[in-house]
Amino acid sequence: MAQANHSTHPIQVLRDTATSLEAAIRSCLSKPRKTAIHNLRTLTRRIEAELELLAMLPALPPHEEQARNAVRLLRKLRHAAGQVRDIDVQRDLIRDEAAASNGAPHPSREQDRDLREQACQLRRELKRKRDEAEDHLLRLLHKQRTQLPLAIEELLDTLAPSESITLSEPQLTTLVRDWYGNHREPHEPAPIPQNIADLHEIRKRAKLARYLAESAPESAVKARRLAARFESLQQAGGQWHDWLILAEVAAHELGDSAQLPQRFAAQADHSLRTFKRRLRYKM
Image (cartoon, rainbow, N blue to C red):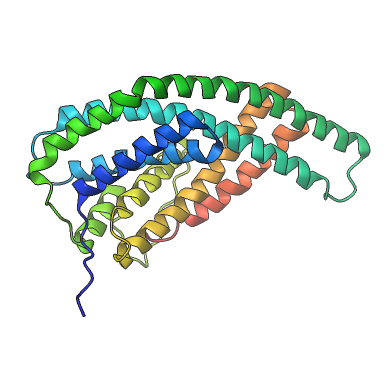
C-alpha cells in the first residue's frame, strides 16, 4: 500500500485559495448574503496566513513588493467584509438574547416589554448600518474584481520558480508553533494575559495559526489536530470579542443603564472567563 503524502505545497495552496477567493467575490457580487460574506472574509484571512508561511521559508525568489501589494488589497477587502459580518453576528445575538429572556424566571411585563423594544430598536439601527456597510463592500468588490486577482497572479508568477517547494508535516507544525510563540512543554501551564490588547492579539494570532496549520492536506492528521486546537481557541476568543463589541454598540445606542447593554456586558464577561480558561491548554 502506498504511503500517504502528508507534505504541504505552500505555493500551490496559495494558488488554490486565490481561485476560491475569485469565486467568493463573484458570489458576493451576485448575492451578498451572510454565508457568502463570511466565506469571503475567511478566504482573505487564509491568503494572509499563507503569505505569512511563505515569509518563513528560505530561498524563495524575492517577492516582498508583490506580497505587500496583495496584502494591502486583501486587508481593505477583509475590513469591509468584516464590518458586514460583525453586524450580521450582532443582529443574531440580539435576537437570540431577546428570545432567551422570554424563558427567564418571572420577568415583569414591563421589563419584558422594555427589553423587546430595545432589541427591536437596536436591530433596526444595525440593519441600517448593515445596508451602508454592504454598499461599501460592493463598491470595493467592483473596484477590486480584477485588481486583486491581478496582484495575486503577479505574486504567483514571481514565486513560480519555487512552485515545487514542499514542507513535511513536522516542518509545518514546528513553523506554526514557533510562529504562534508557544515553546512550552505540554505539562507547563500558559501564562494568561490580563491586558485586553494582548488578549485580542492572541485571538487574532490563533486564527492565523489555524489557517497556517490547515494548509496541510487532509491526510496530515497531526497538523489538522493542531489546527483544530487553534480553532477552538479562536472560537472562544471570537465569542468574547463579539459580545464585547455588541455591548459597546448597545451602550452607545441605548445608554449604559438599559437592560440589553448590561446583559451583553455580562455575556462578554462570561465569554472572557471561558477564553482565559482555554488559554491554559497547550497548543
